[in-house]
Image (cartoon, rainbow, N blue to C red; front, side, top):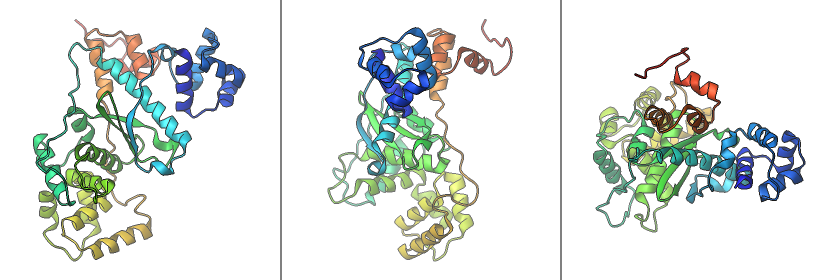
Length: 355
């Protein structure tokens, strides 16, 4: 068990056997023996391994690790296998801690995901997705208003969201997978808020549209359409822009982005899909964006990043209900005990709210 844990942590860190051995002060052959279970590392070596790999020593003694099913990467073909492996192991570590935490509660603290039943047997054109996005918003009591906290909406409806430092590779553009029929979505913690939100909505599209598209519809395009329709419904967009336009102001796009959290380019596609603007106008504006580099970093106020805060909330709930102690809470959050105590007390000395 310890050997597999060492291997998982090493791959998650993107380190070779030789590099990890150099950092710890042993040979690469010794690391290989640890991972193969031929030799059990000493307590001192485990401490060094934990420090180099960025984990607590308790990590090495967890039960057998889980595996992800039905993994889907956006832009997967352009991601080197080394980075795919690191991403998967980092995600698995987060999921394991999340499931361990959830299992502490007598009653599950998170809802079960339920796919929305579709009245359409098969989606034959993209315009039908408009109805599906609207139906999901209605069933989830979202109306047509902007969604200020998309992560919370997904978590409330049984989709677990995880964030990783996507700086490990700039071409990582989202991940969807499942574990024990539990859907998960992964986005970059360092991305802009509108990029995070589009990826989250896109992956929700995969969950909702699975096995419902006709063979001649590209699933990625369908999920892009769904993401735009889910984040910015038809009714408010028509109200903001009107039914037909021959010109758009840059500030209009910026204000809509600020309100709904969809990128300006995403709004252009929505306007074309709803025939508010012509394909030629969308192409012209988009071409100008590319010329100015705005397709990489859009001008104007940036939309705030999403926050995946439910894990931290569950940790403190488990602590408050005496399911765990401070040491276990610190382990789950991957911080030192002293750092956790400071976090628990908001940096205030001797803070306590117990009776």
